[in-house]
Amino acid sequence: MTRPHRAIPVCLACRQTPEHDGLCPSTDAEATYYLQHPLPGGHRDWTPAGIRYTGTPARRHAVRALMATTVWARMYDTPELPMSPGLLTKHILAEFGSTSRRTARIGYTTDFLTTLDCSCDPWRCIHDHDNPTGDPAPDWLTGPGIDPDLLVTVTLVAVEIRWAEMWQTYWFADTGGAVNLAIDSIPETSPPGISVACHRRWCDVCPGDTKPGPRDTARKPCPCSCHSGTRS
Ligand SMILES: [Zn+2]
Ligand SMILES: [Zn+2]
Ligand SMILES: [Zn+2]
Ligand SMILES: [Zn+2]
Image (cartoon, rainbow, N blue to C red; front, side):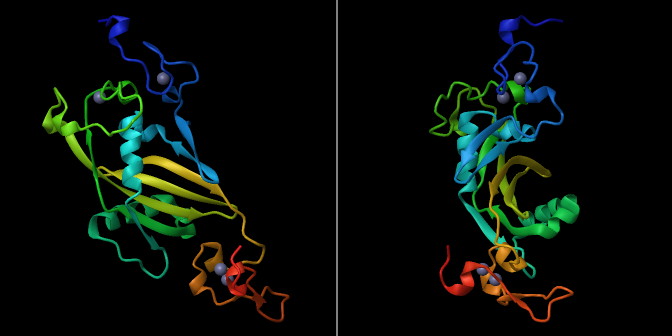
């Protein structure tokens, strides 16, 4: 059975139909993003895994609005999270393996968005295609022809990882499992010799100096600007 070409919607990433462009991330299992957007000091990768939730301007608008409701907790001592995001975060950190030791903060959204669990190929979803600006977010509940049984609510959890020279925030939709929607990357290098606490911006728990190395005779002062009272 061959459907007429015009009946196959264009791909949300490569805009092609009926096939995908040779470089389309939908055909590349290794692709880490289908779209990149600038952020202050860095950028956001919208991941192929999340295209069902982020594949149109309207959907990304709704996800960004949801991200803005995130409550953050430092990964210091044992942060208290409400039950549902707490369990999902635990699951995600287990998947992160040793990288989870670099977690600076975890977050969860205090609001949710309503979206459509439609039967479209997520790369070719036809819903809210025509919204050119992404604003306002589509009103799924009153949209014509929308089956209310297909509406799902989604909350987000976030994990912020502090690498040696970069911050990365991993955003996940809580859909029963965790679906990675976006990864934010913001390069930032700390002064050499900084304490782990200050490197993660937990300045109030830095003792002000760091453990001496094997040949040091005294603890070295932490070079973070927070200790001189003049934050740079
Ligand atoms: Zn494509
Ligand atoms: Zn759809
Ligand atoms: Zn500091
Ligand atoms: Zn410090």
